[in-house]
Image 1 (tube, rainbow, N blue to C red):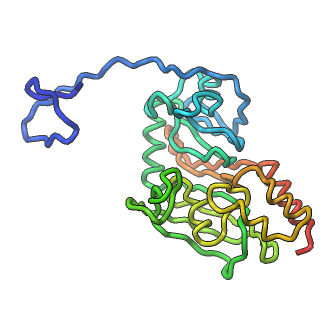
Image 2: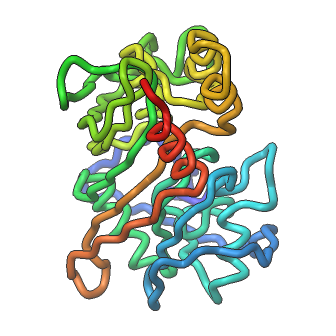
Length: 280
C-alpha cells in the first residue's frame, strides 16, 4: 500500500513502463518489541561494524513464533548499542545463521552498510565456511563432495530433503580427518552453499548421519553398537555433532581479508577424546 503510480496503488507484480513515475512512501521505523537480555556471549572479535561470536550449542540465532527470548539476537541487543535493521524486526544484524544445535563462529552486522556488504558476500558465495563433524560409518575415499539439490521435504515440511518439489543447488565438500574403525569418522567440511540443514541432510542421505542428530537419522545408529559405555556415550550425545570451526570474509569497511576460528566445543572435544581412548 506504500507504492503507487498515478495515484493507483501497485502490486508487487506490476510491470514498470518507460517514463512511468512511481511514488514510494517510506513508513517510519517501528521500535522493535524484542527485549535485550544479558546473556553471556563469547566474543571473538568486535569493532564498529561487525561482531563475531562463538555461538554455544543450544542457542537459537534469532526469535521466531515459538521462541521470542533467549536468542543470540536478544543477547546482541544487550551487548551492542545498535544493530543493523535490515534483517527485519526479528533478525536485526543477522546475515547468516547456524542451527540451534550447531556451535561455532557466526558474524553479525552492527550497521546497515556492513549488513549489505556481508550479505552480498554470502549471496555471491565469497565467504569461506569451514565445519567439522562426527558422522557414522566409514568412507572409501579420503575426500569427496555431495552436490544433491535440496529443499523442503515432500513428506515432512519441517525437514529438508533431496525429495522435494523446489530443489535448490547445494554443494558440500568433505575430507576425512580421523577414522574410528568402521563405526565413526571425524570429517572436515567446506560449505559452498548455505542451505538449511545442508550438512546434516547431505551426510544423512549419503548414509552417514551425524552423531546426536535426532532429526536426520542419528537416533537409531547407536543401537548397532555393542552394548556398553560406547553405545551409552553415542546414544546420549545431546545434539548434532557439528561445529562451525572457521569463517573467512572481507571486512565491509577496510576491505581486508579476515579469518576467525572457534575452539571446539567441550562436548565435541570430550567425544573425540573418548573415541581416541577406545580400541576399535
